[in-house]
Image (tube, rainbow, N blue to C red; front, side, top):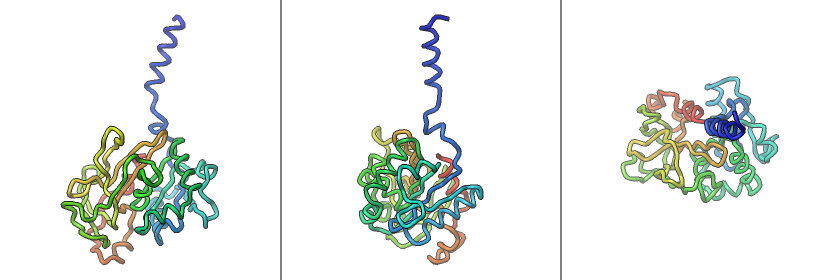
Length: 244
């Protein structure tokens, strides 16, 4: 075989190899943000949901007040970074993260990391904030055909990976329609057809965003006086993790 034939063969083989986002290592070590950009017990709820999926996950809380802060060096240890839910002050949440932590998160994902954004964590990923997707996100409440007219806690109907279910909703966003500049895979839709959860890529990394809270446990439903028969029947949170 001559050198030109060898080169052509190697190029063809390289094109068949998966991209870094497609060939990611298994998730073992998870960083969950905890701090003023998140709500009380939101980080802990994510940790509990992850442990229900796999008790072997190694989970650390990260943030300015935690033993581990958010820096390029610390994020490099983790297979997944989670930005949980928070309040309604999105600019305030971004300010509380600070420029250095925001840049560390962007760099982590760009280099092949995984970002899971839940409710506020999804809003923070948009173009005007962390810039992990090239679109701005807006609230789902008040959208045509959406069953929860306001921002009060509710259980809403969704189609999650093609299966009907309910999920906890707390003024989360919807995902704008995909376009060539912002392609994504739809994971879930609200009853009115708006996209509730989706998977993006950002440079070499993967970004999964969810408007509602599939990680919400029984206590959230009880505290909001939502009937427990409106809790998800399927493994909605697990579906998000499996999309990385």
